[in-house]
Length: 355
Image (cartoon, rainbow, N blue to C red):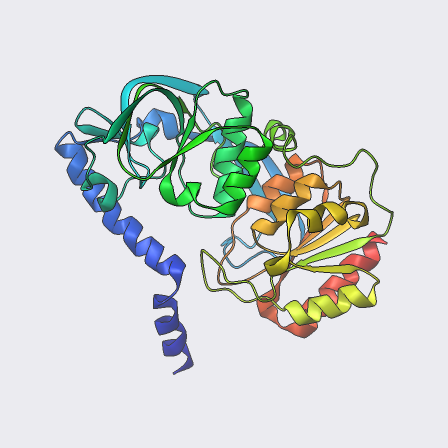
């Protein structure tokens, strides 16, 4: 019965639903490709090669089938242009990028699904010039930092408006970050034509951050010149936070207790603001965090050691990659699903080693 409940519960997970939508979308993309209404990436543009192996300590997340405590940083085998000039690009609220009667993956924000391929695309108005970001994802704060901010900063200063899918443009963090960069933007709440568009292309594979990506992002997340106090400790706790991606649980209370016993600071990310993270910069010699996009705020810190608490419900290697690109060599992963005793023991051991 327990196995059945777990299976049925999994059917309700947002990540599972996203996978189902993705499979359905893949089928229709094949159909629209055959009928010349959709142009996917040229396979040569998506070929990958291994650039580096990154090692970490502690537990291998269940998502790593080999159980090896390492991940490979992948890069595109074929160098992509940083931008592409496109005439008469029609962009839609869901992120579609159309030229004539065809939707192009390399001009779209995420792999187009049915809402894009079947949606209304007759432009309501036309703009002379503008920027548009090609991306694979546009749903979360992590997507914004990873795929949008990196591309925008790389092309500063922008000499025309930036066009963004309507839902993404409505997010408070988008407005905040673009205000910091003094970038004007247009919310694409209906189809719009950009007569002379500049499409900003993705340079890195997925979340496989490189040092140049970190250098660019730190123009927004400006770290202090001085290092944090030796031995200081911060925990980014997802206590009370609801995931935009998948239903996942973390042993927040036990981790908060261990960190507090060690004299560390606990930041509950559900209630945190940018000022909260800036104020903690000099207390972040060691950073403990529940896997989640709040760790992007560590771009404004200079940690020496990082400890990631992971869930069996959701994980990817974004922060292993990010920390390595930040120059952090001491990285530990602890599986939260193995119980409080395991978590507390692993965490105390990792913190004693870092002392």
